[in-house]
Image (tube, rainbow over all chains, first blue to last red):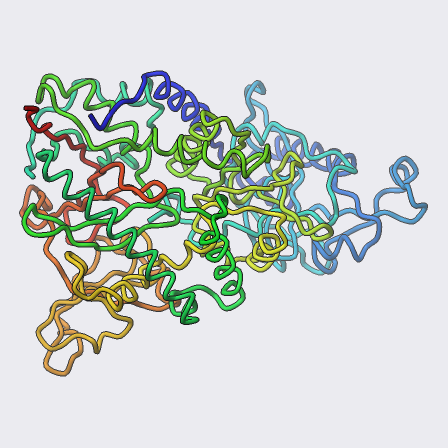
Length: 197
Length: 414
């Protein structure tokens, strides 16, 4: 006999796969540089509300860096801004000014349990042009399209992100190590299907 | 061996989804899992396949040994900065380090049932169709087998052998958790999740993380998952040769060399690219079923039918079947490529050329005769343990090739 498996192992495998499949649940989100760019597709009221929400989350939760050089190492020249004074006082540990990435825009999607409304989240762009919301990479754009003359560009786009991660808040300040980044693996041949042999 | 058609189980799609979590049976609406047919073997034929695959695996290891001894690792598509680490990984394996021992691979064989099975290639680092082979076709045999052919068996010890392979690494891992990673697509993450479940069954601590979500800490030169847990052992279904060529290729090698990271498959498996076929042919030109292979097309003569393969190609990407003309160059009208071939992403890492061999016939487009079947034989540790069959309507097996189950008739006992 060449097959001798017990059914229990099969069930274990099935369980694990079902869970993995749930994690694959994707939701399309829209990305906009400004509320103006958003208003070309959605109502100005929804756009303004989502942008305001993203701005508030940005001030509260953007990754913090001890100095501008550390921030620009991740987010590129001109891609950083000082942490607002009121938050600086709460958070500065070394006494110096703290920096955080500049808001590149916001993303919005219809969230679970938020029937009919949109929810805005901050979007950042690293020096490689990868767009992030919190720890999730949500797309890629040319940096010059995103930041023009130090201002946010009037760009728009869309991305698919896992539903579970969209509903997560941006990582709270202080938990992101300035030296720790994702995105250095996985860039080859992203064709949307299996990459094995 | 014989291809036999029959009706599929009436509710097979729902069954495999709900009972097995097999969600990628029909990507984009095209059939991938195909149970309207099966391949039937005799036990003697299965023995022949098993012996051939185990022997090809041993020969591939001899060829890897030759590459290390003769300083030819770079010829196999391994980038220069990784060559020393690949050689060191090989030496540790040869010295008995369990963490450098091979876990799994899939040898693709061409066979019509006549003569010796021929080796097409060795997918030694990130073989696909693991779950389909191990679980889905086994479920099919248990479920539908009795009405199709009572008493039939299947060459399929894949699950048990993988559990055993992970269990054998338990002591060497000494409690270190193993992260499993893959490209963030349903098929690959599900397969990585299955492998994770196997390692869990073998008693190891495990975690699943998408390849894009792996983080690298510049300061302490380690990799982390998004929860902030350091990655100390990583099983990657995402092609490691791609990782080597991405932003963190050098830090990956650095972490492995410094002992901060254990990689599965071990680094030396980078040598078992399609290029190993040329070295295998060098050391054993008369091995049964081993097709002529070389790094240069000039090794072949006018009139010969040759298959050009990008060293790191995947899923048929870039493969061309050509007939050489009087000047030794391909005859323009003779070139056969994959059906619907897209832009090629492989090829820069070098090519290997192999003599063409006929494959078992399977239905082509619209029931036509041009299709073929390839036998994928799984080798766990050092032994062939299972068979999975892929069919394609064209001449080259690709990502869309159908998976068709198999069975065999046990030999009568005296």
